[in-house]
Structure formats: structure tokens, C-alpha cells
Length: 382
Image 1 (cartoon, rainbow, N blue to C red):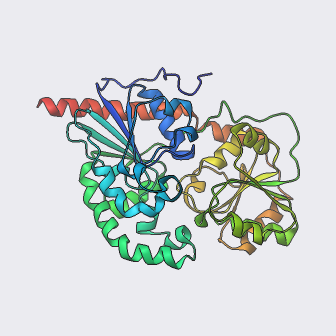
Image 2: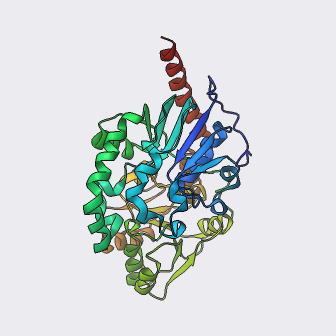
Image 3: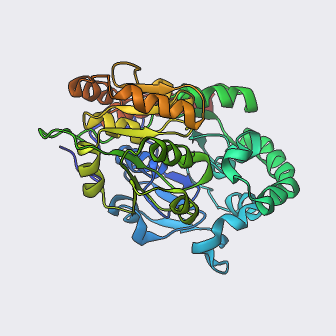
């Protein structure tokens, strides 16, 4: 089994001489950082540019690379309140000096795609066009009047910048068909689709029977809609374990009944143990792709998901999980009740997850990049 940080046997041909990755920020190991880590295995000599870095919160494979940060890193209290500097992010990413790189790969859900690659090919892997600029404002900001007022002021400028920098990108890759549709709708550009990698060598089933609890593994932010799950299990008096941290924790704890427990941040091994033992993973938000449901299926466990967004591309209803069709407590309650009479084959869940393996991601990524690099080199000689 290949360990993280070990160079992948899959290589880019022809091999670019100087490669840079541009990533929005590096202060945790979420889905986007796992994508970056898998890409670095394919392009192991690349440099990294990012707005903000907390080296102690990222994997050794990423932390070992040369990393250049922006002026955002030096702003007051940046680690705690970096999101409040959002209006400065476009300027910060455009100030990265990427001269001399013949390949730049941005991995973007915010501003990374706006980086300039003056001397080479720019490929942008899009987790989503910025959710708060084109849709999902209510889901992203919740009921915060201050945040909504700030976006009313800065949002139009940020959106104009986002659209103006489309010319910086030669090729787009989307993390799902769902996001490819958004890229076509908002940017009027086509995108190849490569779904994010899931570490199916790490997330594996065990032989034990499931325990009697439901599980959420998520950032505690408004658009994840975790309050729906809490209200549903309060109503049904079902046990729910919530793993994750975020600004909504205090409000969610006030909403939670006695059957809900909050575990905060846990290690990968602790999350693995919970995924293996849970009755089902609950996934109440609309995600761009959603890696955690695939990790749950890799452990042989079914998923109860809101039937929109990326979950439609991963969960097979009736085979690896159930969908609820409306983002309401009643609809989720109905799905939780239906699970009691449904039987799911752990082997079927596992087979579905294997379609999203790390090796598959790296093979598809290397193939696309190789073809685009070869074409770019050919065009440059003409």
C-alpha cells in the first residue's frame, strides 16, 4: 500500500520542468487538502502557494513541500479571523509571482483560480465556484445580518473579479458533474470531471456488527444543515454522534437533546472507528461532491443523504443508502424511520466506494494533465 507522501508510480508525460500549486488556504486536512495531497504524489517536485498556512494542521506530505504564503499570513489575528479578510483575497492571489513555472495547478473553492501563470499552462481544479457569490448565500451565511450586509457591499466586486479572471485559466477540472454544471452555468466554460480521491486503503470495514448510533462528520457551519439532523433525532429519540468543529457548535449544542453527543475534532483513526461502527452516516447538507459519504461506504456503512448535489453521484438509493427529498426535519425523520426496515449489504457499500479510489483519481488526473501539457508544448512550438 502506498503511503501518503510517497511518489505515485503514475507520472505526467511529458514531464513539466517547474510546477506550482496554488491552494486557497492550508489550515486543516479537509477534502480539498486531500485532493492536493493526491496531486502532489503525481507531481512530487512542485512548489505550493497559499494565502494562509498553519503547518501544524496539515499532513506531513504537504508540509514538506516548499510553501509560499501571501500577505494575508501577516495580517492581525489571521489564523483566527482570516475569512474576514475575504475582500483582500483577490489582490493576495494575484500578487503571487509565478513567473518561470511551465505548469500551474490551482485547487480552488474561493480565489486560487485567479492566480496568473504568465509563462505556462494553468489548470484549475474547481471544488466549486465560490458558493457565496452565485448561490447558497442563505446556506453559507445562515441568519447573520452582519455577514449578509458585508456581502451586499463586497460581493458585486468579488463576483466581477471572479469572472474577469476566467481568462487566467486554460483548462478547468470539476470535482463532480454537479460542479461542472455550475461552471458551465456561471462561467460559460466546459470542465472535465475527476471526482476527489477517497483513501479506500485506510477506510475499510471490520467484522464487528454496527452499534446503535447515527453519525455526522462535518464542519459545524450553516450550510451543512446539521440542525436538521439534531431536530430529527430529538423527535425520534435516536442516538447521534457529531464529529467536527466550527462556529455553530454552541448553537447546535443548545438545540441538542440528551441523545446527541459532540466529540469535537478527532484523529483519522478515531473517525475510522466511528464510521465502521455507526448504524448509518447522516449527510443533511447539499455538497459539491462530499467525500465523507464515500468514506462511510468504504467502511461498509450506508448513508442517509439529502438528495441534491454531489450525493446523487455517490450514493445508490436502496443499495448503499437512502435519500430524503426535502431539506426539512419531517423529510429527514421519514428517512431515519425507513432505515429501520431497510437492509444494506456492507459489501455493496464497499464496492461503490472503490470506484472513487485514490489510484483512480491519480490515473485520471495524470492522463488529463499529460494530454494538456503535450498539446500546450506542441502549440508553443508552432
